[in-house]
Image (spheres, rainbow, N blue to C red):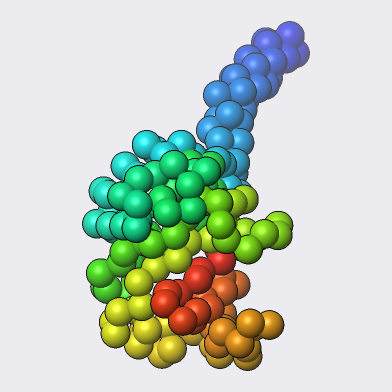
Length: 166
């Protein structure tokens, strides 16, 4: 009888180990994407398009190495998720005018490193940001900044909103 109980317990333990082995990669993948997996241009564009977000560039291109383009190459998945969440919550039309292309200020949480997007400052977007987020002062360049409850920073530059997704 004792050996039967041990066999049953061993079987349950093996089943538990198998379940963990199957689920663990899924948890790891979800955690990785939430923390900012780098996306390709096509992956990011597909997600943004599906969410109804548009983008434009003065050069009508997506080359990461051309400052006249709007690129999503190597953008963080969390940044894409953040702007999609913003669009859904605000119910505003959102047009991205800056992504990961060269020509922006540098630093850890920069456009180049995939943490930022620039968007067109429509009345709907500006009203939503000022109403829903907390004013936290001016940036070194004088841009007024607002912080969302998630900790993301929305800075109103002269021609666009510069958004940092942390």
